[in-house]
Image 1 (tube, rainbow, N blue to C red):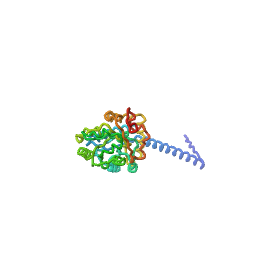
Image 2 (tube, helix red, strand yellow):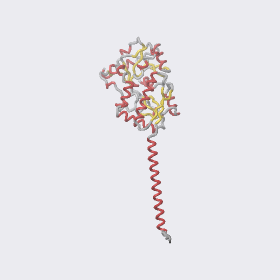
Image 3 (cartoon, rainbow, N blue to C red):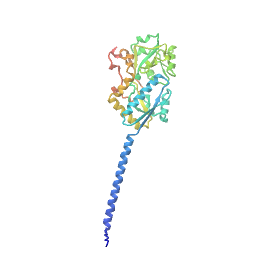
Image 4 (cartoon, helix red, strand yellow):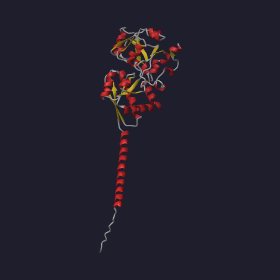
Length: 322
């Protein structure tokens, strides 16, 4: 038997064409692999677990209540992010704002909340939604149990006859002094209770979010919540991050927008503090308003759906209606 050998003779030009075709196939395969890996990497990034840590104060019942609300708020927001998430408390005592800034920048936690003023934008990255719907600026007054003088107050000038007490580093101190109030400062809340009991001050204004829980504290014995007047100034507490956490800030802002739009943010807030409106009777009090000269420019006061107002209730009494 004879075997035939067949030879294919390829010219130079044809060989160059074959090699070019092979190179093209290889490049296409490599390109496809890169695309697939890029899509996979993007999908993995979109599903990256968000790890949120925040300050949790458990040593004081009032601050613990706020910490619980912030915990639930963060869970609500992250549930709308589309990412898996973990929310972890970091147990701390009550600390001043300067310490909060230090803790955020050092990574002790990555989300906190802070009173918004014109300096906050320089220090941290605020998420401009008032998490307490502005209720920090609706202030009722602790007075001594036997002191009924404030029942006669009808306007700002009459209210200024009362010497008020506030913390020495609280932003409210600056706001009240700018409005013309005489303010005596103390180192902390319990110290101010003592100043009021010993007649060193006439009244101790506290937000409607705090005052009813604080009235139950043993330190507040001999004091009562005054029934006739409410002082109001625009103020906000924002979630804050260190300035470099812009990606997380965008996620939280987008989640806030969704929670505001679908009503779940308002529902969460009412579930937390809805009972204080009946206790506070804001629509039956004399409302006295002052300006807030330290409020930051990004306060979004024009977004009325973000802020509580007693005009949502009936029978509001204000300076203009008197």
